[in-house]
Image (cartoon, rainbow, N blue to C red; front, side, top):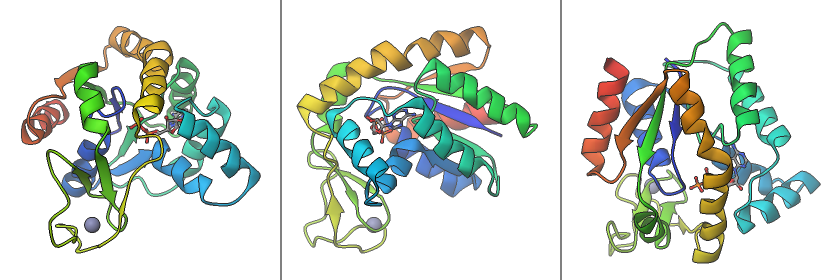
Length: 214
Ligand code: ADP
Ligand code: ZN
């Protein structure tokens, strides 16, 4: 089973992907995570990627398609979850070709629907555990008073450089201009399933499970 999680920044794609990895032994392919890794590499490419990401703009199709292609060669386990990819129609076409080459299918595209006002609140204030990636939020799920991650006990927490109001505006604009046309594209293909991303986290999980088990 291979699926895409689609939705604006802050819709909860990463959180839901982590859950699916845990429950269904799927493989999360997050281009955002891959790019954040690439930027720490110290290469010239990493430098360019860092600047683009911090501004909130999209990295070139060529770079992200290359990253995805590499990962598809590995073990498939319970299937792939594409998280933050594709983000442009060119990426969607490339994914279709890559899957066809591997004799794999795309089983569902799950849209996490959330209004803009909620996204700003969710993103500004967000941090993650530097060790296990658990997501925290200053208002809704603060880092415990003892400074230890509830999942792994880690004591280092990270904030993303692009999780500020200015970059977020650009990220949202990029989403509406470049990524939201994919909703129409996958709708016509008959693959689109929409879920209320503002519901309680457990309810979102249940709604996704319903799609996957249908
Ligand atoms: P978000 O929470 O904004 O969805 P991600 O972690 O998925 O964040 O991505 C962070 C940044 O990485 C994006 O703003 C963009 O610069 C870059 N990026 C991630 N995935 C892609 C992609 N598929 N195509 C182009 N750029 C990407
Ligand atoms: Zn942790």
